[in-house]
Amino acid sequence: MRVLVTWGSKHGGTEGIARILGDVLEQRGFDVEVSSVNEVTRLDTFDAVIIGGALYANRWPSNVPRFIGRHLARLRQVPVWFFSSGPLDDSAERQDIPAPRQVGVLAERVGARGHITFGGRLERDVKGFPASAMAKEHSGDWRNPERIRAWADRLATELPHATPGTPIEHRAASLPRLLAHGVLGWALGAVILAGLSPLIGITAARIIHTLAVPFIFSAVGWHYFRDRGARAPPQTAVVWTAIVALLDLVIVAGLVQRDFAMFSSILGVWLPLVLVFLTTWAVGGMMEMMPETVRAAKQVNA
Image 1 (cartoon, rainbow, N blue to C red):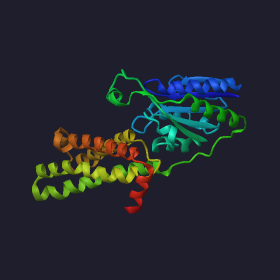
Image 2 (image 1 turned 30 degrees about the horizontal axis):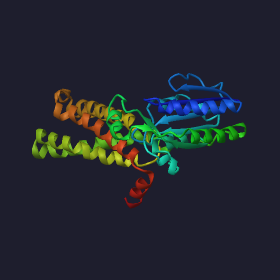
Image 3 (image 1 turned 45 degrees about the horizontal axis):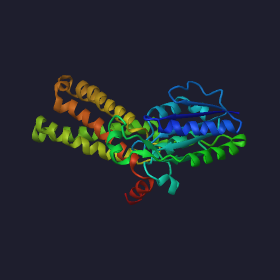
């Protein structure tokens, strides 16, 4: 049985876990390849896959979700397990830490059979922000090789009889829902601008419109991202910004004003577009870091 153990991380701690897993599985008689997600180009020769990622702000590095997206069809045909590396303390030893929202959604899309969180590692002399700042107080190696080996032994027992899990398609990630929220945000801003312009003049209306954009897209973003399985914040921010720009170009400039001079205005066009992008990304990122129990409570009380 051929098994792939693959990972994505920035500082090498997750790679160490992957190699321990690979060593144990090899000792148990499996044909194992241990490679970074950046090095794996095809999965059709593997009978099972173990995917790991280092947690940064409750998210795996972007190359891991991209890897999963590229190979989603194949991953749904074989048994898959996930592991995370992250806590810079002994919390992973004291309790089972559930997968963060982003990782949990990826596991559901694949139909992963399980997920486990191990302690992380951060060198004192690590480069780059914010890792270097965190290292001042949280440097150290919190990985437990014995716990890693124990999990690998459990996988070795399950693997010969394991079957693919049942994937979940999240309706929250649908393209129509993504586009509808972007159009709604643009429409709310357009109503404010169109309603105020005859009353207070175009310049004052543009100022109020620009100030209102973060509030509009905070509300739209909260409604969009609160549902499990919504698309990633960076992707959503790009799409919504493009929607606003396109509707401004076609409807406002092309059909209403019949003049594209508005695109020379930083206050009227370009600053609001920047605010759409930044607000969407920020709201989505904050909601991804919010524990599932807190998000559920907010939805119940909404």
